[in-house]
Amino acid sequence: MMPTPWVKTSRLFDNYTGWTPAEFAEKYYDSYGSYPSYHSASAFSGGEVLMASIELAQSLDPIVIANTVRNTRFDTLYNSIKYNSKNQIDASMLIVQMQDDLKHSLIFPDNITAIIYPLETWKSKQCAADTEDCSGHGRCDSFGVCVCDTQYYGKLNPRSCDAFCDGERAYDTERKIFFCKNMTTFHVGAVTIADAAEEPEYRSVLRLAVDLVNNKTDGYFDNTTAQVYFEVAEDRWECSSEKGYAYLEALDLHVQNQTGSTDSGLFAVIEPDCSLVR
Amino acid sequence: VQLCGGLQNDGSIEHSRYNIDVLRDESVPEDSRVLKVAATASLRSSDAFARYSRDMVRGWHMFALWLNTERRGIKFNGSSYSILFDFIDDYSNITLVTKVYKTLLSRYDFFFAPYSAVLSKAAVDVTDPAGKYLMATSASSTPIFQSRISSFSNLPSNIMFSDASMAAFRSFGANSTAVIKDVDISGCGNVSDSTKMANKYGLHLFGHFDVDPKSPTYESEVFTIISQLKANGIQTVMGCTFRSLCFLVSAIRYRASLQEISHCYHLYSLFKTLYCRL
Image 1 (cartoon, rainbow over the protein chains, first blue to last red):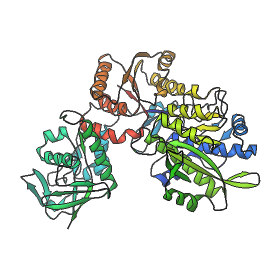
Image 2: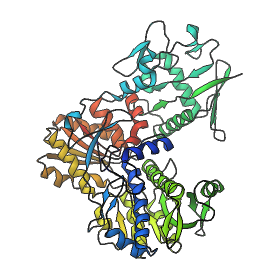
Image 3: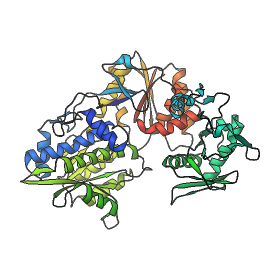
């Protein structure tokens, strides 16, 4: 839950743009791919306050503008803004609960019954979101890991149950890693030290990820091209997605922070979308 | 719309050609007069306040696009003025914020403030004595703005954040709480006055717990605190800043495993302050 002075469902109307908060939120989403926080709404309206004050005062003198700001009410999509004697706005605070990745539900002061308690775990939500409930071929267990139905292997991603390489899967005994014959994609899932310790098939994935970051593997990360190159079973793979890049950064950070630790905090989260380079 | 750059040793701003092209091609008409506004923001993803700075900059950016393209500028003295934001990277660094605003003082009359109360204070301390206009859109600490001549905050007082949160706890039926916050430069203003607010709503405040996110034992310290709270039957927790969030989510609600925390690591940016009910 979090406090906020603004939600996109606020019943406000912006006198300058003619937008409601919801319309602002949708335009923002179209531009940036996420919904605005109150910081964005506050920033937008901060510009409106300056604009309106200059037009009202017909001056570019900052002190004149400040006096106009102080003595004017501004009806914006963020709030009906009136600065108090301490040069701040007075606004009712709201409490919202993040009930899924995109939905912040207003729960206080007027909607206490909307609170969800307990919430689903992050892992179960993540599992469901990542795999669309195991691609319809498994179930998300209590640890948030997709347990695939017998005939589905789940790639190398523990949370996915996509039918992978048509069931033609082989096992690399040297690397202790599953791979698919004739596969066109290679997907390394989220694996932790804890998982790796418990699941032998993940150990090599983890080692690959860590070695990759430490430049000890036969793969490497090219800072110039933002691409990851590594080799598995003598095939060369190329990973160039932005997502893969971000996850590798996260991994790098944690490896640096937790060097030598084996029982806490070492995240081997690596999820690049990679393609076989012929 | 925006010129993003860094402050050079000679006081100039290093602009990228790309952003100058964006400025001229997409937003500000060639024949338009320009009102220049300066602000610092944490522009790099590795900056401490990158997430919320990004939200803030997007709000300013969206405003400028709307003003310059849809509304065709600010109407002043018979002319239309497009707005031009100069964003300078502050690296979430107080010293640099002071230096940048001092450097720009002679060239701008209108400023916006960076994310966070601490950085905004550094900016206000420079601009207000010089009679410059400043609007802070993401800083809530009242002492920064009261008694100022030409500086404003577009957020409610930081006390309102604690007030609403404690009121919500009480309405949910809780009678006890605790505060965990990271010791960092944001100051966690929105959990300030929690003692006063706990008393106001009849909540037993078990204690304040400061944790250093840079400490190598951070994780274990947070888990120890959480365990202590649970053992003492504390029903709610107010947490502040990024890393507390992750470990609160995991530790309180989901009996954290490493994988949960790693998911949380990627989700941390969705919150500033988290309240968990045990």
